[in-house]
Length: 251
Image (cartoon, rainbow, N blue to C red; front, side):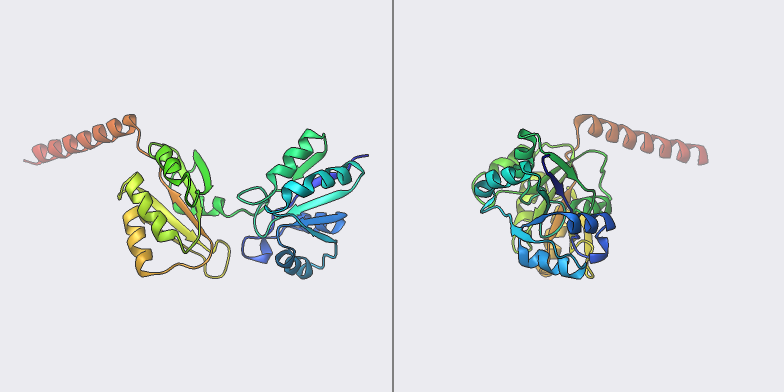
């Protein structure tokens, strides 16, 4: 009988966000594949998990997948974790999951922590439709990606380094406009987590004066459609008409 691959989310900040089921799966697996065994080792020790660990990161995932598939086919049960959050979301994992699907190996992803969902909800920006962009290319392809998003009407979510935040906000101002609504969340679920809301220009100005630390999630409102512009203008006209009627009746 073939083994099974579990995708196990881990806390993005507060260790209390670890679910009992995630702990149980990590304890019962034959091996834990970790993005960084030192980082995951702290988590494993905290929860009394002594399952053997192996490294599985972006620098070795291509080379180790064939061996992992052989072991899974031989009946080994594996659990994949990243340093924080849900594996394969801007972290290694997708390639292994795809390989498992190609070889008819069962994959089960546990629900759990991921940084962008709390940031999206905290933003107060419409979240019924959104696009997760993750990390933008640092150099090649960055301008092309931003240009392609200029007219995106869905809410957009980005991950960013605190060292590049101000530069990214400046580029967003140039691409999306200074007045586009946005939010910046940092250190989700940690002791000093914060969310700042405002226009892109206001956020850029704030973080130029207040250097950020920690992991960053940027949420940017989508572009206004022509229909929304027409509806907004009509509502504005009706509002003015009603005000004029009220003034006429008072007179």
